[in-house]
Image (cartoon, rainbow, N blue to C red; front, side):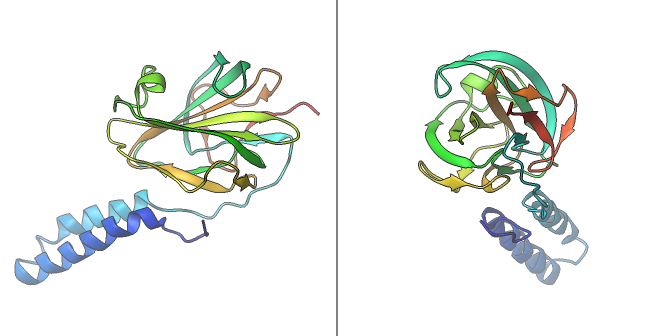
Length: 212
């Protein structure tokens, strides 16, 4: 993915609403065109991809998403880590930036897509009932599992990577459309540096520190 300010998945939404706005303005009335123009502005805002200056540190785990930390709990991960870990859950409202970034440099060693329901992303049951896409990333220092979870409005999870892809720290790898949740599971020896209720930013906020 490039640093283009709008992700390509948003271009059809933006293009259609621009055409509708112009058509309504010409055929009906310029005042009636205000509503589709507002919708177009929302799509421009939602699918934005603001530039981020990533400060590389192999011992840092960066936030994979913008949003609010909903919970920090210990879990048993048998899908990828094969051991107990610490799960940090980040809720993304429709007004947050929705692109996801790799928390660390590494190679995708695990990938799993699960079809499911579309419960509100902020509810705990969403983690195992909703549609989700998980990638396991491995570096010489650590292994982590990052999961994109669809919500009640989010009906499509987008991934730009696949098994074996080498990711740089903070690299864009996907997004979830219209409200969602992102989870990061790290080994228990990782020092978690965020707290419940904290706002985080993808590629900028340090979620945890890997022991050297």
